[in-house]
Image (cartoon, rainbow, N blue to C red):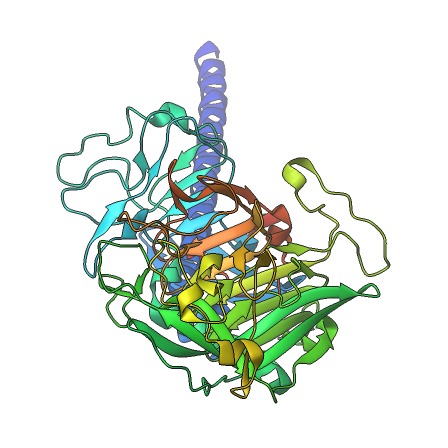
Amino acid sequence: MLVVVLMVILTILGVAILTVAYGARLEAIRLKNEAAAMLAAEAGYEKAIDWMGQQQDMLTALYKAAADSTGALSFPDADCDYQVGFYTFLNARPIYRVISNGHSGAFDRRVDVLVVQAISGWAMGKCRVPDSTSTTRPVYFADGEEIRIPIHINNLRDNPDNRDIYIQGSPLFKEPVGMGESRNAVSTGADKYASVMGLFEGGIHFDQPDCKVTDEATVQGKVDRFKDTTKTAFKFTPTATAPITLPSGTSKLPATQLEFFVEDGVGKVRITNDCTVLGYRRDSDSKTYDFKITPKSGGTQYEKYPIYAYHVKSTSEVSRVVPLTDTYVTQSFGGVESKPGGQIFIDGSVVIGSSDYIDMVVKGKITVVASGNIWIADSVKVSDYDDSGALCSRGSNDMPAMDNPNALGLIAQGVVKVIDPGMSKYATSYSEYGGNNNYPGPVPPEYVSGSSGYVYAPVASPVGGGATYDRYLSDPTVVEAAITVGGGGWGAENVRRGSYGGRKEASSPQDDLIVRGTITEAVRGVVGMIGSDGYLKHYYLDDRFLEGILPGDIWLRGKYIPAPAGWHDYRASN
């Protein structure tokens, strides 16, 4: 009897143990399958993000219903399917939706994420400036500098593999820095950043997707879509018709002049088409850093381009003055409309400067795209008043308030540069012209008087009186805009390399250049030579651009990130 009782007890215990073991095994299988389903879903999300980063323009890719916007992946114990679609606009910034479903056994996991294109405060194709038709030199972040703007630098893919960010001394990077390259050298595996990691107070991230500002096809695709969505009345193709006698080293370039101002509380722009710019090119590479990327060279060849000297317009040319709201368009995709914003497209170059010698003020939202260069000839700031007339107080570093609705975008397939105002000097005769700056010569008197049928359109500020003016830009020169440079770098023209005298500053030896906005450039441009010529730079990120207030969707980062509160994942069993 005792044996029978013991056997019953042991049998019960055995069954219980087997039941527990079986349950534990089922739970382990369930957890394993659920984890595999989740990992598969996340793999599908990563595959979708990788596909998005390879597109020249996401809206165009989705409009064409690209087959790769959906797909599937298989793994030994799981699989997934994913899709990418347009979701909505954040003001004028597109938001996309990535849905990825992971499957393993009886379990499904879904990742549902709203993503936006990443925006850097300052993105550059390379941290180097062209100094000849085929070579570049490093641009250093210097000892004592505090860089308070997020930075991204593309992978240079140099050999030997050195750091792609150039540092002298101990500058401090207060905001995040993204690098296209890896932290370790390709061939040796050595840590290239070990000695400088302490300088990146905002953190540094490696192996980041390249910014597509170096891809001419991508830039062209963005520009084409911008042009297609711009109102016909605000698409311009200027011509250079003035019969200017060209001094040695000069050429004629077509341009449109834009002047932004506020009148009776309304933001307006004065548009003067068919301007003729006298461009001056220093053919000697040893003089200045005025290079742009040679088209179709893949960003490896550079050419001297004619910098802005002055421009004239026909006396019969009638300038148009329009409210910025007349240029407004609304992007529409998938039945969803963006917030309206202004767009102007110029198939040529642009001069932004006032013939009335006043700094530019932008009240409204406007993006200007030029197939050529954009020359900045005055300070350009956004208004501090909203549409109702309420004051939007500025913050630290005189930054526009977050509730300020006014914004300016400047995009050029050439370069975006601050002019040398000394080039615009004019006199009643060539004998009156002097100085040691090796300028191409003053504006001829027949253009000053308009007797030629064309009249000189001065920009920058006059100093002095009578017939001869020395021109200056304000110190500091302020540019409040999102700047994108497809054909070279952002900077100042006529900054010296030789000893001919350099550009003209309001104070000696250097003025201050303040940018409140964002900068995206294919290569670095020269702003100044420390202690001797050009500008001292002060760059600040305008966080408002992250909120999508800029019309046109011209951003070029190849990275897509979850929108705030945009990540959702779910689990369910079949």
